[in-house]
Image (cartoon, rainbow, N blue to C red; front, side, top):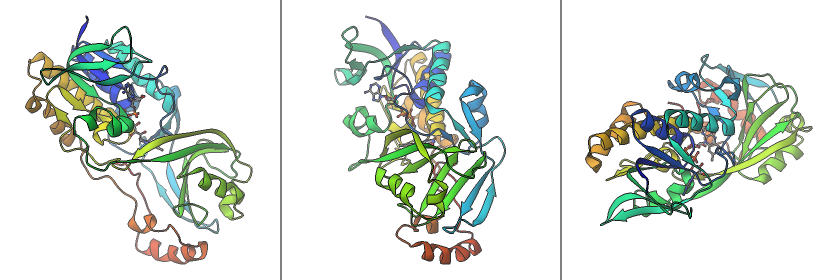
Length: 366
Ligand SMILES: Cc1cc2nc3c(=O)[nH]c(=O)nc-3n(C[C@H](O)[C@H](O)[C@H](O)COP(=O)(O)OP(=O)(O)OC[C@H]3O[C@@H](n4cnc5c(N)ncnc54)[C@H](O)[C@@H]3O)c2cc1C
């Protein structure tokens, strides 16, 4: 049976980055993905949020996966009046074609030397005398895979029901709710490079954000399909703007109730959690945490010390990179617009502007 130094569970941004980093540090790596196609089903709209890592992440990526760069956020009152515009620093906030982007990261891992196995689900950890020695899988060819370190990068689903929970690394009572994203074409009066933010009762939470793709299309998130239908049937300013919009793709994903809540100790002897599995939520957090996980795992194997103490270097590195910073950056006033009528929101806007409360970064800015 083939032995590996590092097994990576899941080929999302965290998994591929971990596999690449570990391979680059001379580890023998296998990355196991349950789906037959990396990046599908699509996980999210692919907004690369503002961070000091953006340039470096995009550096090695085929530029064809970059859909657009954003230069400002524009805020609309329920009446349609533009009440504020915030410029974004150049080279910082982008939309990427998320499914192809994930495959690009996997290509980088493969080029670095990682083996990739698709269509194979990891069913649990394989242990000998209570110690993690690998994983069990659904594959008849490799029901057990042995390695010195397992990096679990299985995302929110994994965190809620897979290895992280089974190993008691998650918090009690964690759940998930759905989020829906719709790519719409035929929206009126769009300007490429502008993120449009609409305030108004049309939206379930009192605010809607359109990640513009070009002059006629963009991506918008909803809590439910009800919210999407409400927008299309509304006779408000924003309803008129979207009245001819047609869906090109609808995709959903699980948002963990603990999304963005980072585990203080995402390691055990021979095990590291990376990306969403550890609460490092966002593409960027996934990539950076995965990179640290891969590097720490490879060095630990080389030094023949895969104890918890040795793997805790991963947490230090994540801390140094700023991954543990609190990143919620919506102004509290913006979050509390839910349930207000258009007239009430119009009346609140001058006060919000005066107190600099009409702003948001991205939930994951750091
Ligand atoms: C609705 C929504 C919108 C979002 N929008 C954005 C955004 O615009 N920008 C942004 O930066 N972030 C966004 N996010 C967050 C972002 O999608 C995640 O933080 C990111 O995908 C995490 O990467 P990951 O590699 O940790 O996990 P994932 O991308 O979830 O990858 C996990 C991988 O593991 C595989 N897997 C799971 N279990 C197993 C198993 N047992 N065996 C084998 N393989 C397994 C899965 O198939 C998957 O490929 C959004 C999330 C949601 C829910």
